[in-house]
Image (tube, rainbow, N blue to C red):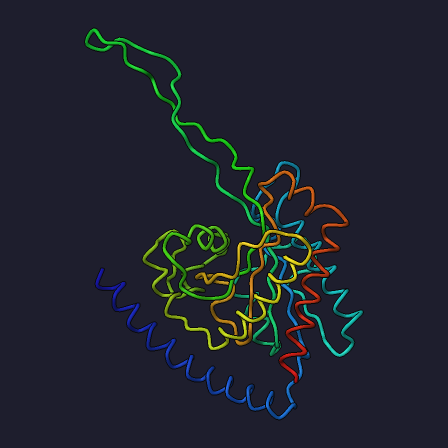
Length: 294
């Protein structure tokens, strides 16, 4: 207990120091924007999961494949329509990339935007059912069994930025951060963070993102574009996500639909659905770019 408390105190000092550095950098960024010198030149596109980390599973497909297909199509669209922007992918094939390396690449390349693409999923609904009866002390007593049934009705999009989030919303963070368990030495890579331990989220909540406002703005543009296409938006939310926590630029994670919903799964796998999602993301990037550069 005391060791964890000491770790959190030391980590807080580390984060405060780095946040101040980030805020100085952000001040330079805002000055450049005001002087009309700032331009969005590099965008990192992250296809969530990969290889043995399949992500969420639908009836006929898995998250890692859909995320990669959309990421590659988005990159090609950006390169086609925004000639002055360089696109960097965290992965272009079915490989596993640790979460810290994804955002590390964006920081190393001094990216101006980071967009991580994922599919959402709802956990199965658990309920107790009566499977029979037995006699106990002369009374007829029911025999219960807990069964799980897929939650196939939830639908819509949502886009996340780095933040603490509410405790009731941490299921999504735990699901996305679970990818780090597949990494070797994950506790060293994330300063002792354990995605299975709710107390560890205190650490990520201390990671103030100097680019929070810009991230929310980009996320809002993305959700707005989804709505224009007739999609149901579940809004912009803040969560303690490892892939966004150390971003040195505006960064978002967008859930493009629920793979656990059969109708949305078909949409996510269809050429039309992916084309619409790519158009939504591209339009959001254009809107953000115009506003940031003017």
